[in-house]
Length: 116
Image (tube, rainbow, N blue to C red; front, side, top):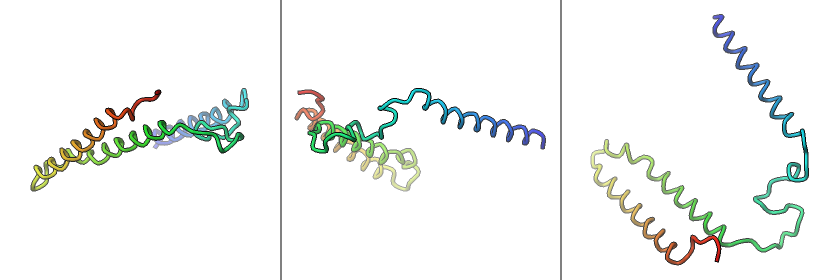
């Protein structure tokens, strides 16, 4: 029982110290950048009609697409326990092939270039 009380005390003390430091440390040197809200790199006080980089958003969408691909392929290690694992792996190969062909197409079209 004494060990549990010690662990709870240390945990509470450490949490309190970290909470105090996290509230105290950012306020040491406040400036305009720290006090302004984060708006995805855009100036929140400027004009809303500024042009934005379409290429940045296309690369971001491609990143999300391939991130989704990884989420779809995560259950594959458990696919070998199914009654027909070859069907599962065939679908996985089909998804990977389609995404690889899409990546090659985007690469050939220059969709992955940051600068022109």
